[in-house]
Image: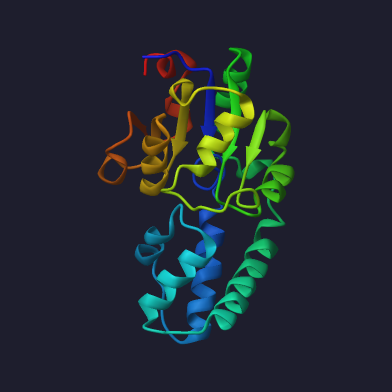
Amino acid sequence: MSSVSTCLFDLDGVLVDTAKYHYIAWKRLAEELGFSFTEQDNERLKGVSRMASLDILLEIGGITLDEHTKLMLADKKNAWYVEYISTMDASEILPGALEFIQALKAAGIQVALGSASKNAMLILHNTGLTPYFDAIIDGTKTSQAKPDPEVFTMGARELGVEPTACVVFEDAEAGIEAAIRAGMRSVGIGSPQTLGRANLIVSSLKDITVDRLLTL
């Protein structure tokens, strides 16, 4: 197996816990539309684009709307979400994430972001993570949502590396699938039940070292 030259990280649920803010905003929208949206429902939205997430939400509520109304609702949800994440700071970086990224940089391994979030730059700026990334591919640069591999293949292309030299870090099943389709290895952050197809599964970035990564 080829050695590791580049690590590509999802953002939400891997480096920072913005998932809770997405959930609060989607729940608020569901309540405004007259139905309840649970944490279990929210699991279906992990790693999914904004409009696809709205479609799932409306399906849960049994609501059909025209495209114009859907765009207005997606914008409303996003405005609430941006309001919530605007107060984020470095204290919201998940345990072990910054230390692991620093260790990768010290080992000469490139670090890239591969996130569906259109608000990634705001989050990276507020948490002080921006300077650590050699490439940032987010929802403003991609047209296809995971499990399409576009976000990861773009990252590899921008850094001039082969997919086989890349390892993806993901907390969502769709993200692991995207890594597989991209021809990359993957580390799942979370539950073996949902991330079983990853090459390695850890509960958080506290539980992985550069040495362990290089054995993948």
